[in-house]
Length: 367
Ligand SMILES: NC(=O)c1ccc[n+]([C@@H]2O[C@H](COP(=O)([O-])OP(=O)(O)OC[C@H]3O[C@@H](n4cnc5c(N)ncnc54)[C@H](OP(=O)(O)O)[C@@H]3O)[C@@H](O)[C@H]2O)c1
Image (cartoon, rainbow, N blue to C red):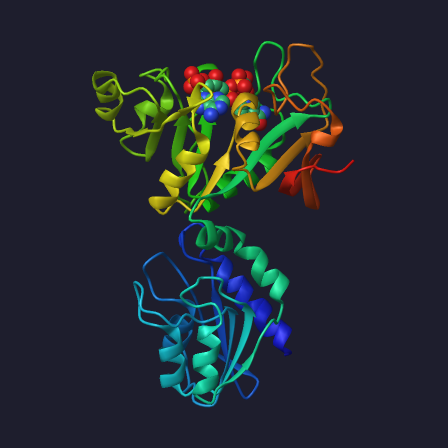
């Protein structure tokens, strides 16, 4: 097998940690000796051993003189677990093949330096793009200390997210909706505007087996969330935050008594300040949020610059209707030159639906 094939296997292993390791990165490792895989491991959950240590622990033969393939540069600092560079050096491994560099300022090339200073051969950048891709959340969070925000919506081919009567169940097919649930498992939080709660009374949980629920966040400046809605009624079982500017302790207590957590956020332009909310959630180690709208909150989120990625599911349906809502509302830009600019477009066909994913670069400034 070539370096790329072993790294591909390490990538597959890394993906097993999806949804369980946040705010840590997903990492996989494979140890090879005499062209045979003698040990495999991955980072299984936050606070648990890293991939390299698990792979060394699982070796069926001595790793002395072996090569380890690891999707991310080994760490060299004491965190919840001791440094992986130490484990590699002590194991007698003689070569380390790395996918991504670790942008964590505590590592950032120092892991590689320590290995080389201990006479271990290091090869960098094998399947770098693929390895970088699985950790877009970690790379963003470690640099900004704010959550990576993915704005997701499902719309018809005429760009509607609900009918003129406000009904939106369902727009896309089963397979697309299953994929959304995988993302609910993958990301740490899920966020909606209070109007979506008032109109749809959603659960916002993850309905897949062996999955975890994201923390539900309702943006509700004035505490209008119905006290008997499904989210509040299940807040004792599923973590729930109501982000509000309403300081009325008695009103807040009604939600707290049912298991919700109130996060008080200052106001900006009559609503909670989304940027400030992101700083607050980042401090609590929330590394990622799936933003599920509706259109009013989506517009504010884009305008405040907190959105990193847009996921548009398009169903082969047409709702029509002047009053039927579109995914982004608010005031909108006044000319095409003011558009939000998206890049790195990825298009995936999902049964009859189409998913378009793209990164938000900035507000367009072209002529
Ligand atoms: N197809 C889909 O993918 C999809 C997904 C979600 C929703 N929907 C549909 O979208 C519709 C609801 O959308 P909507 O646009 O009416 O409302 P929305 O975006 O769900 O909620 C808007 C409300 O959020 C509150 N909010 C708190 N902080 C805010 C901020 N910084 N910026 C903006 N708003 C903030 C505001 O009320 P306060 O200021 O009082 O807090 C605002 O009125 C429903 O019909 C639902 O079915 C469809």
